[in-house]
Image (cartoon, rainbow, N blue to C red; front, top):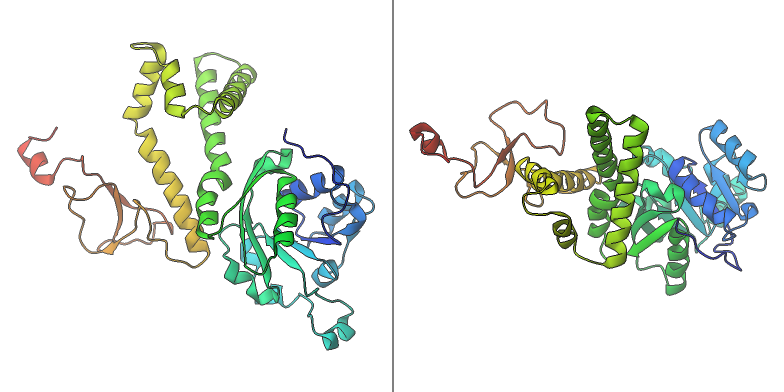
Length: 352
């Protein structure tokens, strides 16, 4: 498990968490347990009183608050860990003002130097402007953060000075590895690889375990075999730094058992399927942020005619001559590959 040495000084004067779900907990736990931030300098707010009570039971000194405004009062770091659909005008109206007259009315104040850190999927930086905060960080962590092995990609506005960025980097490194990117588009891209990636791996694990059970292993044994095979393979690849293709080739003897398995995976289209899945995830991330999602080899076309198979490579399209009401947003109805038989070939029987 990844761990960092305990800090001799706090990261922030006060850090506020809006939302106390699993991802927020994956950040709060290492912050407090590893000495980066004392519980007394952490405030939390959640619409679920039960969730906040559980947090208070775990960390008696943590500040549980009755409102969002109270939680962010005088905080120099505010972490948004709520559902993206909950971030709307009424949500921003709960934020206190920096104006001194408003402070007198509600007794809560938003610090001028506060940094807003978002872990919301698909929500671009521009959507956080209504907060009144100029220092904005957009990040995309993943679920292994819950055991300190997370992978986070983040970007920020130019308002953050070097010291601010260093503090944010330390915060994001407390629960795994973090990579800074200077263009927000890479955060959306990372959503499709590291952000949603654990789900792909879990699905692969599930399929391998079920196959093992089908062959006769107990589920417990099959699970152990799969878990340690994936763990060992990942660590081996990381420690050797060898290209995955070379590692795969080293396990694949000519005419052997592995070669037979690899043949079936290739014949079943594993590579293009994974590629299409990752591009679909990226497009959905763009759509959630209200941006153009017609990108990549899986580009969605709104056209009345089907593209020519002979000139189009791996093109997904939406056929507007048919009803598209049953097609989920961001998904593709049809797929055309340049290697497919042409209609003329099929009619003449000359296809491959």
